[in-house]
Image (tube, rainbow, N blue to C red):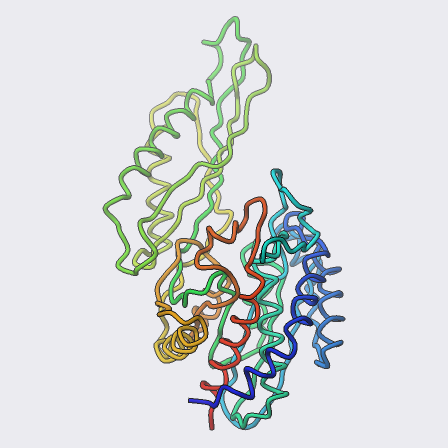
Length: 408
């Protein structure tokens, strides 16, 4: 394995700078929705250039942004060639979910309290923009002989599905990595994650005066049958437990309902939105077909009722790609050494941008800055946070793992 001393010293020498870099990223909002993320991209580019990196910009056309429900996005790529050899991509996203309510601190303040930095996106995943940037900086400064290239991919559409971020970089040929390490949100080495299907369901009927409801067709009443069928379906998913540790079982959740005209009117339209988590053993298209059958059967035979079903998002599950076992073993070994405890490999029941690299055949793992679990980070919740010292620890781990991977 690579001699860690020069790399660890290079990481430690910039510990304060890395925290300041992360704080600057957190203080610029990049909520998605609405997804107007180009301003954050400009600030990130400036910060990376201040570190001495040459930054390539990939401004996403407005029409492509609108197609995924966003306003603007600019992908950033940094490339550093150490010598002949494979290319390792380090990908983290700068878009974040809106802060919501319930914060005890300013969600854009990047304040440090009791050894934790708080802020929206500090864990998911602005900390890993800092982790990966300062890991690359340490590798350059340490002067360790390496054979290959390291790329930083900073993208801005993870919360919208990743199609105009990582998928675009890979599809267009802007990057052709041999390995990928993606933002991980905790210090477990993740080798698999769930997929996700979002469906929109429109239950349509005919409006009528509430004094003569028999002259209409009640879409809300029909929608209750759809809901009942979906909840029965969700309850029956418990026997599909994934064989991948950490993934668990698939889930189906109805997250949004809207409809009706007024209190005294029979509803003519009810809209539902559902989220179906897909375990790696399931085929995404089969899951969608299964759900469509459940919904259509629930309203079959109802006079005057029709149902429309549209796919909003399909994120396929991420599972191990040939070659990923070596990558995972290297990262886990260095993480265990740095953290001082055995760091396992396994899966997580969410979905992320790692799947785009895996779908392109790139051996991929997820690893980054964060506490022991995603829940400890309050990810996507109020008071999102990371332990301050874990930024330094994650940066060491990534730098050492990349050095091992690119050892001559």
